[in-house]
Amino acid sequence: MALDPVTLAQDLIRCPSVTPEDAGAIGVLTRALEGLGFTCHPVDSATRGPLIRNLYARLGTAAPNFCFAGHTDVVPVGGQWSVDPFGGHVLNGRLYGRGAADMKGGIACFVAAVSRFLENGPPKGSISLLITGDEEGPAVDGTVKVLDWLAARGETLDLCLVGEPTNPRRLGEMMKIGRRGSLNCRIRVFGTQGHSAYPHLADNPIPRLLEMLRRLTETPLDQGSEHFQASTLALTTVDVGNPATNVIPAEARAGFNIRFNDLHSGASLETWIRETVAGVGGEYECAVEVSGESFLTQPGPLSDAVAEAARAVTGLTPELSTTGGTSDARFIKNFCPVLEFGLTAQTMHKVDEHVSVADLEGLTDIYARVLERLVGHP
Image (cartoon, rainbow, N blue to C red; front, side, top):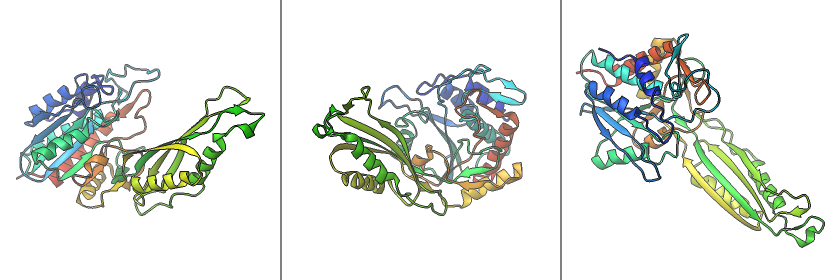
């Protein structure tokens, strides 16, 4: 019998898997997949602290290998909920719980879709799932470790669909065919502390920091590209930490985040930042961290299959978008074409996170149609 996406989503939500805890979520998923004939491989990792539970499951051995990727970890509850955040309650046609939208609901829909697909026979190719417990956290012991494990085994992925919640308001509105890159920079400017009445005896670092920030922000990075909006630089903090009104501080700090499109790379932006900051002079430190490069999966068979399925179920043609933050697709894109399509994103990470039962059923139908088109039966 085909699995019910609502029931499976409830079972997953009832596991309080706040990063880095698993709380039984991978076990729930493993049992459901083994019941469908999947071979399940735990790929756990603990290079950066607590043990992270990851899962790779595959049904079939032939190509193409169509992979669904997602995560069972969730963000902390936060705030005051009107329901038990890990109760998985259905009220007025909506399933409530942390992870309902992001993204235990999406995982449940895909597994239910596979069960419906298998009612018509085995796959002509292979179906796999790459599920991590480290997407909402540092993301160093999750998807990247599973991909390394697959590479070591000589196992390949041919197409990948990430089930992140991509639709702004209605199911069928949007899929993500790429993502912007993300870079974080922290600058520390050093001076000499002194009395504010005698500024000539001190070296105030604040004006130099302000000049650095002015030069970095005075001109837009670009005007956007064919599939990407313009890159952005957002100041996230400016700190002196000076409680006194008559003291020139010895240090001033600032941080900013750049979300960049395919006109840049992390390396090119780092070079520009360091050259700009160095042009101001003085003593300083500049630390740059790139958490992901921009990428784009050109429209083709994968996006066509998702668009056709979404249109058949919802009547909407999804926009091909690259907006939003980052996801684990930034790692998978090095292995195969990848895009993201899932539930609506309106309540993810919010108090009283929820999705409609109708959307769970609709997404399951969409995923089943994608499987029929891209995997098929002998």
